[in-house]
Image (cartoon, rainbow, N blue to C red; front, side, top):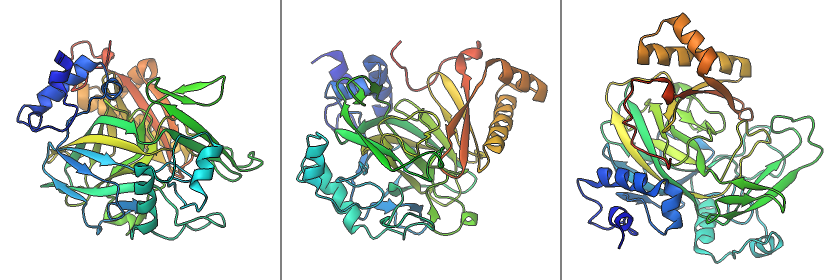
Length: 400
C-alpha cells in the first residue's frame, strides 16, 4: 500500500471517519493533485453520510421550505449526494417516454435500461411526489419540468442571518454520457435557432474528455448547476429553480468544480440546502440554454458560520475569489457584480471606492456566467496572487 492509499480510503472505512479526517482529506487532496485523479485511481473521498437518489429525496423544478429534510447534519459534516439527470432514457427535465434501450443503441451509449443508475434515476423521476406542473409558457408536450434536484439537507443551528460554507470535495459523473440541446425561442439567440437540436456526448473519465465528434473533445469540468439554500419567504412558496438568486440556486457557475467553495447567506432555519442540475462541462454564458447535462455524484462538506451575514453568493477556488452579480438585465447584473466586488475589496483590504475601482479595472476579470436563466449572471474573478502578503491557507491544493 502506497502513501496515497494510506491517506484516502477506497471505501468509507471507520479508520478514515475519525477526529483527524479533515486533515487527512486535505493531505490526500494535495498528494493526489486533484480529486478527479483520485477517482481515476479507484480511490474515494471520505464522507460521513450518503443521500441516495430516491423518489422521496428528489424534487423537480422548485425549492420547498416545507419538504421534509433528506438529512440533518451538524456543521463540519461531509455528505455524498447521488444526483439524477442525463436526458432521454435516464431522466432529464421532462420525463421523456422513449424506448431507452433503442435510444442508447442509436447514440452508441454503453448502457441498458437495466443499469442500476439508470433504474434508480428513472424510478425517482416516475415516482417522486415532489413535482410541479410545467411553468407557464412551456412548449406543448413538456412533462412536469424543472431541474432534477436532491434535498433539502438541514444544517443544525443554522438560522437566518448566518452563512453556509459549502466545500466541494468531489464531483464525478455517474453516467457515461451527457447531452445538451437548443430550440427556437430558447437560449441566448432565441430568434436564430431554426429547429430543435440535441447533441449527445460520450464521457471518457479516464481521459477526462467529452467527445463532441472526431475533431473535437471537451475537457470535463463536472459541477452542479444548482447549489443553494432555500430562498426567503419573500420569494413565495415553491419558488421555481430556473432563475438564480441571492440564495444561490441555479448559478450555472462553471468554476464550482471539485476544489472550490461556495458561500451562501441563509434565509431559513436549517439553511435547507438543495443541489442538482448536474453538468459534465459548460462554457461561460451557457448560450444554447444547457451545459452537458448528466448525472453526478458529489461530495460536499457543510460549515456553518454563525452571525456572518452575506449580501449574496460568493465563491472561492485555490487561485481566485469569485463575486456574483445577478439581475434580469445583463447590464444591471454587471453593475451589481462590480459593486459587490468593490464591497469585497473594501471588506478584505480596507480600500475605498476609488482604490477598489482602479484595482478592478487593472486586474479583475468580469465574465458572463450565463444568459439563459431569466435572471442573468456576471461573476468577477479576483486573482489571489494579487495579495502578496496573504498566506495560503486554502483547504485545497491543486497540482502545480
